[in-house]
Image 1 (spheres, chains in turn purple, brown):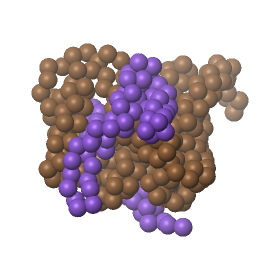
Image 2 (cartoon, helix red, strand yellow):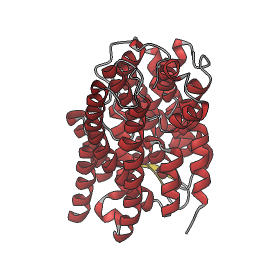
Image 3 (cartoon, one colour):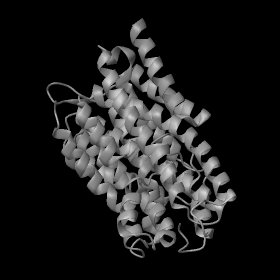
Length: 108
Length: 268
């Protein structure tokens, strides 16, 4: 059984823990300028959207060439986005998006 | 505070209410943790690796991001950069709690920090607000019973049961990861600036991924997108952000206001 990614998990913990712990363990150090706090507030949606769009739209073929791909996966992700925006329920959005792609692949 | 070790009736009632709130959060954590386990299995994680992610990193969005990066064969450095920035918001929760917990032993505060998530903070803040002071057992109930244990058990279930699915792509499970990322982004896009940052992040990410590769594009989109959002005039947030471990709406601004009203240094 592979354990290589356990090290990655530990490194991820090492970069996550300071945000959770530093103010609790060293009060006063957390006072950041308002612009920095605003940046931190915006970085979450920006990173997640960047990952989602890239993973959905950009494909790399065996030769290393990259291209835009428009397929049922994009529609599935957009359906998930619509359901989450409408129902405020991520799990429901995932079921809808994944279910759509599964049906599309079954039919095609 | 009572002279005996028995909690007063008001505290007992508040803890019962906390347990009810915790149960709802736990159900969502089970569902989303299970999906993470499936996605991790699909990306080639072993059971030990998936479990280590949920035990040590314990961060929904960052864990899903790592699944995508690992499955794409990309390097670890971008994963760590994104993880740092994705989880930097915890600084706000930790800072909010710090003045109320500073008299607790260092090791206890260190342990509390590891399980400090969106849900743990919101549950604790609501509970503290009800009882009018910090209740340390209440913190552990929300953070560990409500999120940490369900998330980790569900991860194990997902990664182990996922092995029974012969062809995950036939069921669309390869779409779980980008769909989860997009859904989480919607949950965090609470106002004009957040929406602009997300849109800019997506556009920059795709463009630079085509030109320079996904490992550069994703990080650049995530780090430049917020600068575009900051250039927009501010507006009121439409609603509270959603959590990244359960996808549930968690009113963190209100929770921080609740904690701010508490007297400092009265943890028990």
